[in-house]
Length: 289
Figure 1 (cartoon, one colour):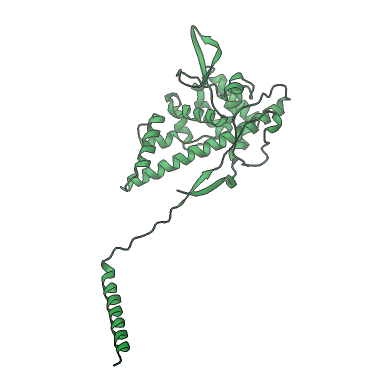
Figure 2 (tube, rainbow, N blue to C red; figure 1 turned 180 degrees about the horizontal axis):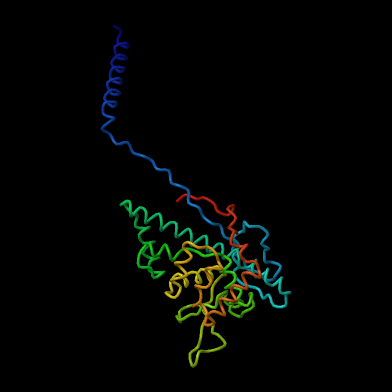
């Protein structure tokens, strides 16, 4: 047999033997898996400063662009119907942005809770995320936290904002992006002083960097404070704003008068139509985790 042919046969035999060995070994080997990271949705928010009423973008569709204004504009002097609409145009996108973010956090907590029930390992980042929100919302358990994070209808938010800010004419709305008249008890807060006092005690209201921050604080207040416990229970299985608002009795010292005014604002201005409005999904993009 020629030398080259003999060498080739040796190489072929060795290769065949190696392949056979690997095939026999394969069932006992752990093949590394390569996990493709899922896309993570991100809301692209357009933060805008405005100098005139004309710069307020009109809401013309149920799918709303996520525009958050970093300052407000006085609506004084406008005809009443125009003033109301401009107030809604200015506020509604920020309400929907805030609701989207709260719902996203709530869904994440629900997923983590399900993993815990399934006795799956929980990444440290998820554990910290849940712990921080338990503390933030005064929640005792994860179920309690999930209940507290349930958003309520947009019509209620708009109606309360309209009453508390005088349809966008209050000093706190104009100077501090504070739509709901939320007080500050911490001297380290960004805040402004009220023109009136309670006895000898000065009153301060929080100052926010944009409208969405003020709306988030409003939602956080309703989630944390014990006087709204029944409201939180009711909204878990009821999205009818007119049935929910009586449970906001404690929001104002006016009590029943306040509830009556909320009901009138919602009905007269047909605010329930905005309960079906959502952030335009065009502005929700996917990015790797």
